[in-house]
Length: 334
Image 1 (cartoon, one colour):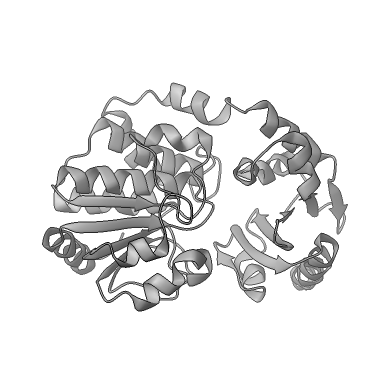
Image 2 (cartoon, one colour; image 1 turned 180 degrees about the vertical axis):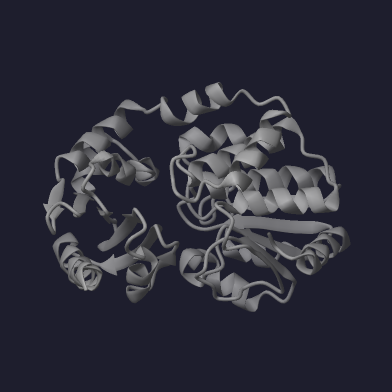
């Protein structure tokens, strides 16, 4: 849990502010969306003027967390408009790295107003004047929950839903090793506020579009085994998105499909981006710290879930990651 001194500083920052910008990393996942939605509703209830901005489209299956469409930077709102927005506080959730806030980097470096960071990742550029960092938390949404409880701010049913979604998505619906008693305890309290967890599961896990399902099939057809089946790779090219009609957000959590295979200790998904770069997602059962590998290529994340952006083509990115993993598997042998 973030320490009480920083929690108190965060409360004071918010209480002293009137016009607040809330944002998160590019390609927002469930935790990012849940934390943003929960913070935005809380701040609005406190009488603040709140502007929530995303750097990428919110995946369709998380849209129900928001009461209105969240502006997309570069489409619905510009950096210049943000610079003239008279914000007196910026809140960043689920990241503390410039590399994940590329479109906002210039704004943040020129910004002279306080920044509050709420994050659970080890990778950090120390962006905040006040930082609620808890690397033991399974999700940033848990830290938002701690803040709300510490400040004694109301947790409505819709806020509870956002925090529940954020927490469950970062724990694979309680399947990942980061699922601890804290996760179950908080989620139990959130359910007591009136959530229908079965319906939420239906909304999140059994609601694929045809496009997304076809994209998953395309990905599975590229499955390759390495190092006696301990490492598997999959990839998606631009043509796969064109053929299926899927969006980049449709790749979320697809990497986890191959983790059903008993021998797999590390999985990687390589996604070809329109600018020629390759987005690399890495997952581990815990024996290998994939965060260290991602950091070698300018990325970061967690021990068992990390990612990076690498120069293309896909084949070259695969070679570079494979070479790093070969070293790690050799270390395990020793």
